[in-house]
Image (tube, rainbow, N blue to C red; front, top):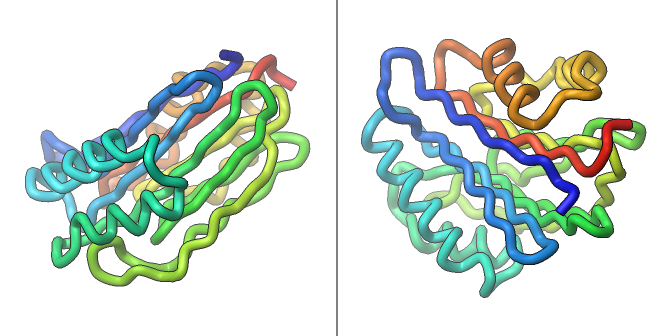
Length: 196
């Protein structure tokens, strides 16, 4: 598989556990990515994030991305709520599908970078009509998902400065440089193939 991926979740400063959670699961040539940000922070938010992650892992082969989000919404109904961004990436072709609810920021960075749109809402409370987006991640390009605990406005600069970097170094720099001190901060970074 010509994909380099890494996820990093940093708790709210002073907390031991994060209400953000990342899921990365490989199935053949398909790489499933999920980033969850539960409302609030601390142990209760962490417990719900773990429950969300377990739900995604146990259902990801049964549903498409929109079906997973709808099922997760039903599963955590009447909870404090969560936002989530889900992606499915084919390692061979670079075909990328994305669906999100809430303020998870997702984008591709490179020659043909674009922002992937999450629908406004809060899983467990307010479920919008979810739409799955399709695009292609070219060789050397990055896919980045980040919670609202990360300032996303300077990601293109980060990509330019780290063109040859691996996913772990880029994710670490992203959270360290752009993570907010007022929230949990998390991201998933995937690079496809050789650097451009």
